[in-house]
Amino acid sequence: MRADDIALVRESFAHLHRRKAETATLFYGRLFEIAAETLSLFKGDMSTQGVKLMEMLTVAIATLNDRDGLTTLLKRLGRNHKSYGVHDEHYAKIREALLWTMKTSLGPAHTPEVAHAWAALYDHIAAIMMDAGRAT
Image 1 (spheres, rainbow, N blue to C red):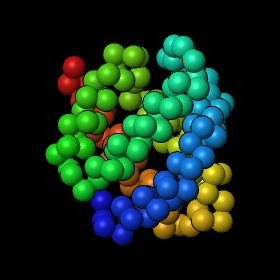
Image 2: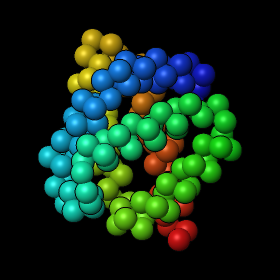
Image 3: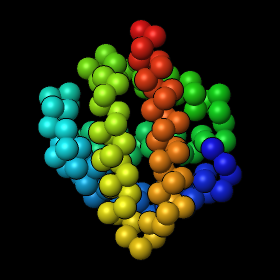
């Protein structure tokens, strides 16, 4: 990712992180709306899952300048998600839900540049995770 994309992601995520429970609720609500079949992949309390989502995004965004560290983290996540039953086709729906959440949560701060930066980040993350999942 380009340095200016990283800066946009970090700046916009700081806004979302202040409302992390709401952001996670929006994300999962949208995901289950557009991909109801993914609901069965989640066990337990969804508020706990929301905390995990926001924590993982926090770590991933914090390590954007550490390619090796980020890649190691994402490969592990990809293998884990494969074991949970996540398939490659789910990643497109997750992308759609995430980008919708960004647009909804950020409101006027959601510019075309921010949208592009988040899409680039997600595509990078998903590619590494899917590759790792296929390798298991």
